[in-house]
Structures are given as C-alpha cells and as structure tokens.
Image 1 (cartoon, rainbow, N blue to C red):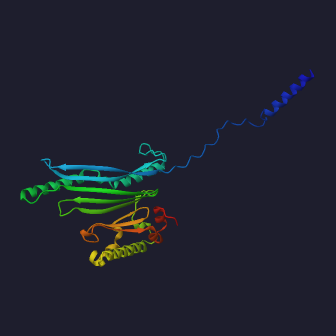
Image 2 (image 1 turned 135 degrees about the horizontal axis):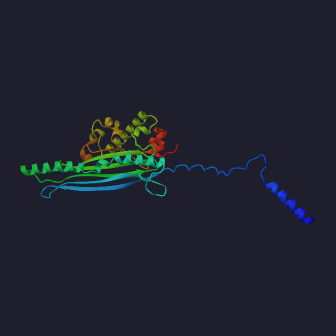
Image 3 (image 1 turned 120 degrees about the horizontal axis):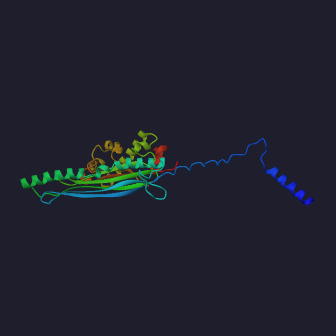
Length: 293
C-alpha cells in the first residue's frame, strides 16, 4: 500500500512538470523560418559557328554568284552546359544573358538572309548580259565570303573577320573587319573605352603603328613613304576606325588593301602586346581584358 502511494506521488509530480503553467497559453505550432534564397548563378556563354552557303543561277543555269559566310553565334548556357532559351530562362541573370546574346547576334543577322545574295546575283546577271551582247571577254561568277575568328574569355568576345568579294573588277577585294563585345554589360565597345585617358591611349597606339611601319619599310629596303601612302601617319592616327581585335597576347589593328598602302602590298596588320597597352588602360579596360593591376 505504501508503494502504491509513492508511485502515485511520482506520477503527479511528472504531470506537473509537463503541463503548461496556468497563466500561459500553449505555444503555437509555427513552421521554421524560410531559408534565404540561393544567390543567382551567373550564366556562361559559348560561341558557335554557323555556316551559310548559297548560289544563284541564270535562266540557262549558268552560275551567277556564290555566297559563303561562317558566322559567330553567341549562346548563353548554365553551368551544366545546358543552353538557356526565352522559354527556359528562370532568373534575372539568365534573362540578361539572353538580352546580351540577342544584341550580339543581331550584329550578324544581315549576313544570314538572302538579300545580299539576291543583290549580288542581279548585278552579276546584268554584267553577264552586257558582256554577251558586247562580245567582251568571258563572264566570271561573282562571289562573297566572310570568315570569322573568335577569341573568347569570361568577359570578352572579340571577332576578327575577313571579307572577300569579287564583283567583276580586275581583282577580288578584301576587307578586314572586327567586333568587340563585353559579356557583362551586354554591349559592343570601342577600343578607346578601355583607356584611362582616351587621347593618350590613341596617341600611344599611333606611335607604335608608325614605328612598326618604319621598321617594315626598312626591312624591305624602302622609305616609309615609298612602301605606304605618303600620309601614313595621318591614317595611323585614325587606327580605331579600322579593324581592331584582341587575343590572348594583345591588340591587333588591321588595315585592308588600299587603306594604308597599294593593293599589291596587301593588308597591313599590326600587333600591339598588352605590356605596351597596360600603362594606358583604365579599370574598365583591365577588367574587360582580364589583366591584373
């Protein structure tokens, strides 16, 4: 009997420990605080090459014109390599990447449609007809070609293009082209934007081009005015309006035939290493080019 009384006392004490005090309401069953959203993962990019080829023929099946272009296409993708599209974009970072790709690809869109080929073929048809009527020489088909070389980093896409065309003249024409794109801002940029002082940067590049012109002419046993146009220094001063591109070692400035020298001299291309450019670059330029302070 005594043991039963002790056991009953213990049970009462335990009940008193677990019951809430009379002056306090039971705690609500609230869920734990929500975890903070994970930071957005930035998109990466790949550059693919799209080939575009076509030809045009006259009514008698004679070949009038050919067209070929190897074009860069910027594709945003996630860290796992899966491409991002308008339908699958789920974050602001992915939507910004899509906008950047659209800006980049729009620059080359005109090379993909049939309009250049149609215009080229129509001019070639007129030339062929005129030659047949006048009995002057044989007709050679017209042609247009664009080849692109791409240098890409996490921040930069630099495209150097070689455009060739033949439209019935004495010889084909070559035009050097270039495009430089900042993946972070989603915009193309001019080379002067990389400089701390645009005027000083432009002057330093001009002086290096002029120096290389002098050395090139000397190696050929000529004065610079004999190998290049007499106003070559003035032309070199406008270097940023010509074909400027970048690679892993520096900046290249390319002048097409006729721009700096006679056609027989060919294209004139000048490479400037980053060591030479570095003192003139600003914070933005070093960031875009991936150069340490």
